[in-house]
Image (cartoon, rainbow, N blue to C red; front, side, top):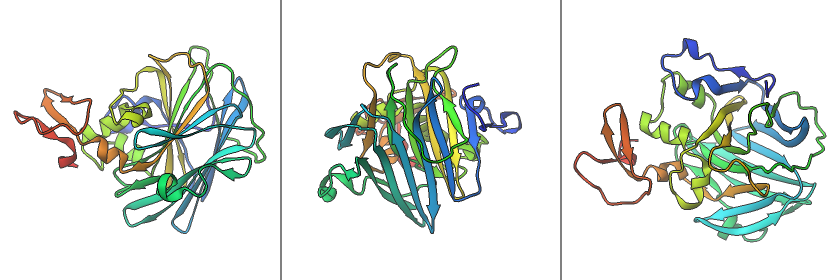
Length: 297
């Protein structure tokens, strides 16, 4: 078993069965703070601290040294930074009714990268006009076989190991959602149409850079849900089929404004039990039974 304290989703009692039902694990907490760490060969490599207070939510992800960290804005790299032993990614956000907004910063040796350029590059870095429907993409990790360890000051009992006997979880995609988003969706209580949830569930964040659907394919996917009172962090791990071996350790974080809603600006057509979906967004209406996914949200 590659994780502890994660309670597997009870798919046998669910109304529906999805591809994620048997591989989703819940780290439950009714408290305002929850923790999770990632290990590689039993050494600590990532640490998540997830906190909320007075409708504000804070996420701190401690990362190892020698990671190539890329900041993306409008599909282009606007900053590349090499991490040091004292590097972490932060998200600071707040909600107002359904809207969720916040900022993501990379902090290296107590210095915020892109400091002084917030109006251009840094804020608002993460915005959703309906957080109940559209989780926020926070970041993506890609791992090679050589990863430095980190020193964690706080006791973190929850962990997951990315190196198993049969696979190496070499990618991690991280999203912020309202509490219950995953369990409600897996129980058939969708807040968005099935086709939209399917795109969210099966598209990896590699496509963020080009606004293109890139299907998540690989071995032994895991969905880890780190819960606090009103929010949850969705952590998707997989050994990618098309990139089994990365040369560098990398972190990607994004300027994100209604990213998932924008991703649904594409044509689709119902065919039997499934759909034909355009890989590219923004194409004109096709007619002939096609519809824009965003028009049914």
